[in-house]
Length: 492
Image (cartoon, rainbow, N blue to C red):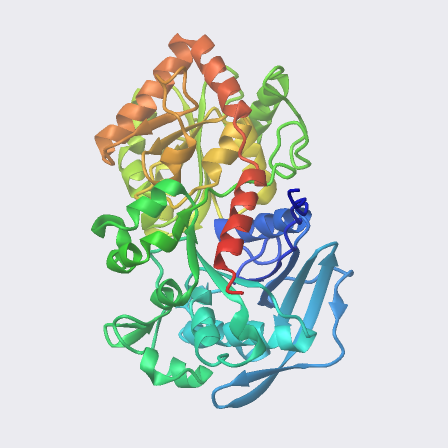
């Protein structure tokens, strides 16, 4: 008689500790803060226990529901102990811990202020990595996985693999996510003794690069598993052109590198329910989009003409985003095409000045807002017709997904996550416009192509809008893939 098999057991719920420098809406410079916040919530909704650790910067205020832990937390540095105050914000399976340590985080900025990057960023985020480990002991909580984000968390897996040997956290696996490989986080050799890390890791097949500690490289070498934010970017960063000197390391770790596309929070970015826009709409009823367009034109002091298309940009103005290509052709675009242009962003002062100068000479066609304004960002996504992203590289990109949710068609350089998320015009019928060659002429041609299609074939634009709005960019599938990676990274 055959023995009856036991029913398969349900997987044991995981415990995950997220280490991040940004977490929206409290601390946000770019897409990293949105990504970590949304991913953490979705992982928690799947039934797993998630604790997020980040600094308590002086740039934001905590909500009234936050809990102040009465006892300070000991942080075991290489030179001795420090004390940090712990604040906790809890919702269901998710807890967010803000670590207060004024010497490093009581500043007017996350990475920099108006004078530039903080000179001790390596110490600030090395301290955060050690503090995340000590928080687990403080809470008497042993996570299955530490999930670190970008170079700021790069020394965390090194600590787990060295200082924590023989201690309870040795059995925790580590996942390291590359959000932008361009930023390495160079630190002097002394950062190792600062954390008590043994010197044997300071070698080319470890943390050393050009005689310094490369915190990004540390994360790539020492983490159990690696992820990045789109499948195409995972391939690109293994090449010299996109690898920023770390392509050989990534090829070495290729078997542990997984590309998982970021999602978007569709409770925040939804044309049907967005609380920051006055007029809602859907792919079957675009009347609200027309009203958002009129409101955007009014806000930007542009002629309120429903027949003219609006091309928009929301971006940090720096080299990666390729907006130097745009600014060099913008005079010609405004002079030769019937359209309006809106930009929201800040960054490189020379680029800011160039865009402002052009807008002053084309006040009936262009509007520039230097800075960031969340309600305006939502209105731009809802009220625009086209969204420009001529990025030199784009690990994932969020704005093209936000745009498509609102029926605003992206015009983008075919790179990284932009290729993964946009199907170009001509592909039955496409959700946007991709161009392969990053050049002024290619960008000019792509804008002209979209503009001509808007006037000559409005039925095609409508079909593209509807197809774009049908795309599923939620976190559900991506969060489930991260859970798979966590299980692969478990050591015991």
